[in-house]
Length: 93
Image (cartoon, rainbow, N blue to C red):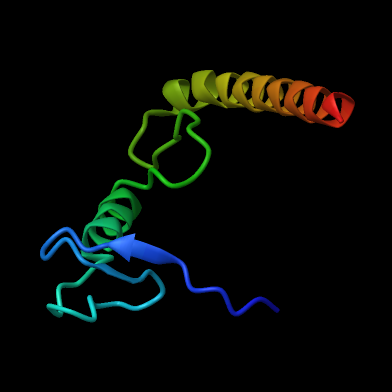
């Protein structure tokens, strides 16, 4: 294991500090607060996962029937794109 220290500039005092720490060594500013807030915001709206058309329990039955094939097509397209990305990166070396 490498014991390298990755540095990050503190947005408050503009000093370099260890990026693995929660607070700046110089001024005590919470370095990862903005990132943590963004992750929590995305979790609230369920935006962290693959962006597919969600089927909600409150949707009428006809809409659930329409959304299911659309979800399948979306997942197939993500699979195809993922395969092409894999193929291009494996052939690039």
